[in-house]
Length: 154
Image (cartoon, rainbow, N blue to C red; front, side, top):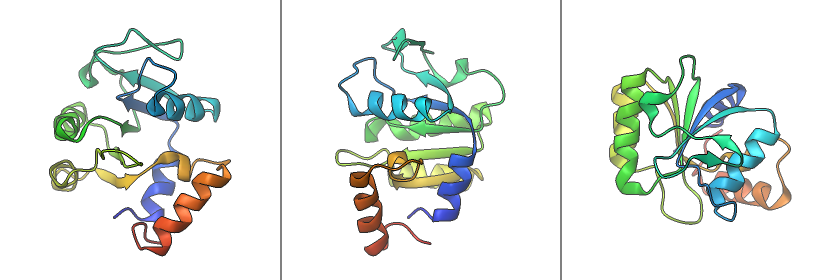
């Protein structure tokens, strides 16, 4: 369960990997990518199946990221999330956001445990759109519901 302090710290970082960003502009991960980029984040998309994401050059894997990445947003299928976390550990990325939205979650028990075992600050199961300002009304509703049900701690 993510805490608001960890979420706020993550979103205070500006140079982020985005693992699982889709080249299909209709996919939700492309929407999240576009929205965060439009809010001023310097994003490095990672997807082995894409050359471009929203017009930005895409990297094939986490190992190809430049130095100085402050965190990684992970929007991959659950069965791939632990492998992505292992790659983030190897690359020295200090923060990981394991996305959880309406569909399958990247925040698997194994991925979360790997983060914690290796001292990585982890947002374990939320959507950045619920917190990255300005927050649209429907994302505020989701944030309120998750806070009310103690899925996000204050």
